[in-house]
Length: 250
Image 1 (cartoon, rainbow, N blue to C red):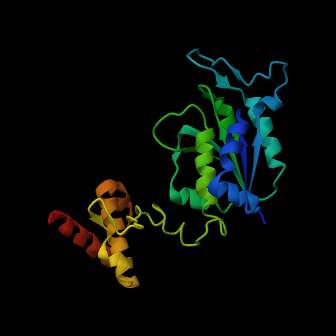
Image 2: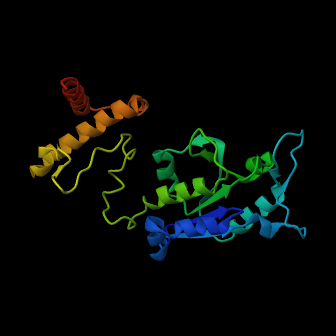
Image 3: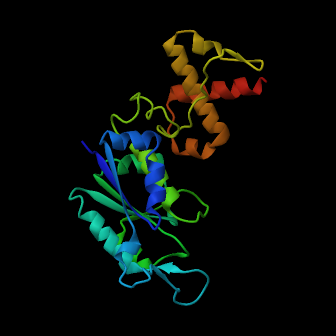
């Protein structure tokens, strides 16, 4: 049963379908847990040159994608699904993508992702056809295709039955507002560094406590902004304090 379908409006459909056919997303689509379609605005133009852009009013550099081809592509994409959906324009002006945002979006039955190009798209399309604008970060890339692929991958891994271990997504970085703890595998000794003893102890309570301490400490070191948003339990406060004390001993 398809849990969610992704529809990407893009001038480079092959770029999206090729990348999405690998790894987690590829397996999800093979199993019919997720579905993907692409919609090229050039297929909705009315001139022989298949023009999708024009010069911006007011002057300035670059070209702007036209309203009509984008609108018609979204209209056709909506015909595929009658359930709850969202139309998302991926742009540097959008709200930052977070794990909570993706988790909420994973509950819709259709996500239409619009990948812009050039200088941007006609603002009236954003106002009339899009539900939200999302951004992958405070930087600019050449088009929304890579952003769309990030969204597809991040949401797909949240769907039941996609990952080999159901706990994998739960333990990812940001899943509970913290960065992930360090991970180790064989060999036990490597370049003078050893796997922490607790991970080989077999004591699952101690291992869980160590992992939480490391996740809290790593977040405190690298992303203190995340800790400011999280209400720590008394146990988590104690573990973080332990981490800081132990760090200062070295």
